[in-house]
Image (cartoon, rainbow over all chains, first blue to last red; front, side, top):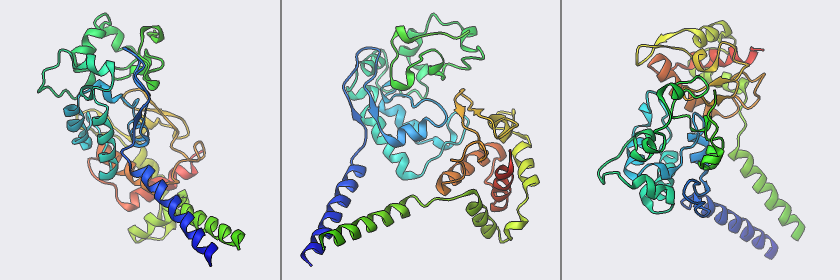
Amino acid sequence: MNYLLRGIGVIATVGAVSLLAFSLPSGEAHGDGGGNVLPRLTNKAWQQECASCHIAYAPALLPKASWRRLMGGLDQHFGENASLDPATQADILRFLEANAADSGTSRMGNRVMQGMNPNEAPLRITETRWFVRKHDEVSRATWSRKSIGSAANCAACHRQADQGVFDEDTVRIPK
Amino acid sequence: MIKRSFLSALAILGMASAVAVAADTPASLMAQYAKQAGVPVSALSAPRGAALYRTEHPGRDGQAVSCAGCHTANPTQAGRSRVGKRIEPLAPAANPQRFTDAAKVEKWFRRNCQDVLQRECSAQEKGDFIAWLSQAR
C-alpha cells in the first residue's frame, strides 16, 4: 500500500513539474549575440505558428505596442486570415512583449528603438527607420526580384535569418 | 510490489499521453465531417473537392484567389506562401503528416476558407476536400 502511495506521489510530482514547465511564460533569452545577431529565443507557439507562413520574425524588431496591435488583428494579417485560438495568441503575445525592441533585452532592439517616436507602433518591420536605414542601398528592382519577392522575405538574403543572425557576412543577395 | 506500482504508473502516463496526442487520419476526419453534414461518408465527393481546390474567387484586393494559387495545381507538390516560404505538400500521399491533427485541420480551414471564399466552409465541403486530397497521387 505504501508503494502504491509512493507511486501516486511520483505521478503527481511528474505531473506538477510538467504542468509548471508548460505554464511558465515560455521563451528564454540565451544571451545577446551582439549588434547584428539576436539572442537565441525559444517559444514553441511563436516558432510553430508564426513560422508556418514566414520566418518567425524576432520580437526585438518591433516595440511592444506594435506587437499588441499586430496580435490583436490576426484575422486581417496583411490581407490574410491568420487567426489563432485565444490561449495560443496570448502565449505568443507574452513572449513578444517580454523580448520586444523596447524591453531592453537585446542590442538590436535598442537600435530599432533609436529614432522611433515613443507613440509610434508600426505594423511592418520594414517601416521602421532602423530597417530603412539599414537597407538604403537595396534598390526597388532588387526587392522585387522573383528570388526575393518582397522585403518581408528576410531569409532570401540573410541566409541565417531563422537563427537570428543578420550580420553582413551572412548576406548573399540572390540574382 | 514496487515493480507493480511502477508499471501501473507507466501505464497511466502512457494512457494520458495517448489521449493528449489523439491521432486523427484522413479517413477519421472524413467520417467526422460527413457526420456533421448529416450524410454518409459515401456521399463525400472527390470531384467536388477538386473543384473547390481549383476554382478561383475574387479576393479582397480584386486579384483571383484559389487554394491552388499557393498550394500549386498539383497538391502532391510543395507550394509557396505569399512571402515565399515553402508550404509542404497538401496531399497525404506526398506528406503523411497532413490530416492527422483535427485542431490543425480546423484552424487552416477556418483561415483559408475565409481568405479564398470570404466565408467558412461547410462540413460537406471539408469532407469533399479531404476525399479528393486523400486520393491525389
